[in-house]
Every structure is written in structure tokens, then in C-alpha cells.
Length: 245
Image (cartoon, rainbow, N blue to C red; front, side):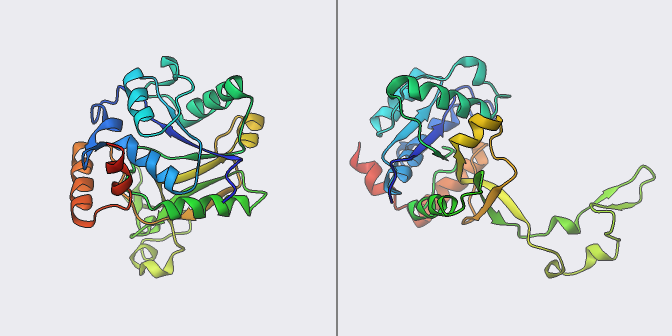
């Protein structure tokens, strides 16, 4: 893969509340954010940037091979801060350091640690092949169609999610409905040109990239699930991670 126009960015702010310090929570002897760094490296991406507001997180990122050319300001590191906030900040600051500004930014969240690097490589190839794509987002197929769900109106009666859906329709087999995809944190790719020109993160031509099902860690329960999974199945990233410590 020619990766001269590709950079990975890993957002890892401090101060999370649902799971304190979740981005550096321990998994198989390593902080969560380290798994995203190594998966990016093994996918063929040379430049990996950690976007963090924490000097302590930055030190951990450097130990595992990430660049921290700048710290993220506190005003865009709050619970309510958006992905667009940290992405625009990075795209604005990076050229000040070395004058380079890659087109493709591979967004890897630390809270999805168990990735196959080949899937990341495939996602980059897919958006490169679609010149009219403004971004790419990973998702897995929903096991249950939301078209079978329903609302309750003010009188307490059935109301379909779509006006044309009747109470009989929602009892039909799921095969009757079109496939629905659940966004996950496996891998997203955004274009620098689109973000800086439109002030939008994904845009209207967002490619849907079907990835393996994955668990995102936002609570102690989900962290326990991931620990059980890695104990059972292992990870292709562990040999590289263990070699760094």
C-alpha cells in the first residue's frame, strides 16, 4: 500500500466518566490505546498520531510508537466535544509542524482494540477507489431489523417507524426488510479536503464499509467482555505489543 497520503489518528482524551481513564485501561498487560497504534502499524500506515489532552497519555503513546506533535486543547476535550473538533484541530496543527497534510485520515478509536489490520488496509483501498466518496464508516449488519420496532402514539396505540409500516408488517420475517447496518468503531476514514472545505466530518457520500462485529468499550462490563474474548481467542497484535515491553 502506498501510504504517503495516509495518516492514522487515535483520539484519546482523558477525563472519561463512565469508565475512568478508559483509553488506557489495561488489556492483556497493555493500555487500550496501544492496540490501535499497533493495528495501524501492522496495516501498513507509517504515520500514527495520538490526539490527546494528557501528557501522561502522550508518554504512553510514544512508548508504543505514536507521534504526539501537539496536545489537544481542553476546550475540545470535554464529554460534549465532537469528532469533528479534534479532527479539525489536528488538520490545522499538523502542517505547522512539518508542512505536510495527508488526504486520508484513518480514525481508530482506542475503545475498539481487537482489530484485524487487514481490515484496515481494505477500508483504505475502498475509499481510494471511490473518488466521489467523502468518507468511509465501518458498520456491521444488524442481527434484528429496526423496521420491526415501533413507536407508541399519544393515545397509546401502535405507530410504525415509517408511515407505510402497519402492525402486521412488523410481524413479518426479517428477510422481508432491507439490511440495516450498525455503525461501530472498527475503522473510519475521512478526507482532509472534504473536512476543511465543508466543515463536515463525513458528508453525504459516506461509504458503508461492512466490518466484523466488534464490541466498543464504554463501561466496565464491556471491558470485561473484551478481556474474556482476548483470553479465549488471543489477538494477532499481542506479539508486537509484547515485543515493545
